[in-house]
Image (cartoon, rainbow, N blue to C red):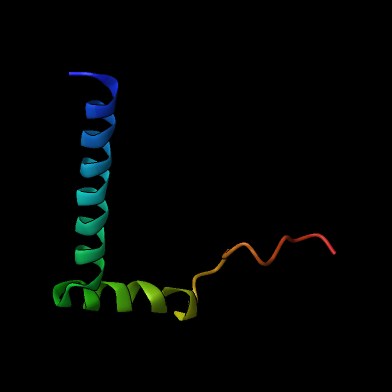
Length: 57
């Protein structure tokens, strides 16, 4: 097994990993979780001390 064979196997492994991540990201079962995560920055945070009040002035 020479270096070119190892490089080919490495490329194939990375391609399979990439395709797996793409499949996971666009799978229908993942959509609800991603939609919830996307709306988190817009959630109403009414807890005191959320970092915007620094006291003092």
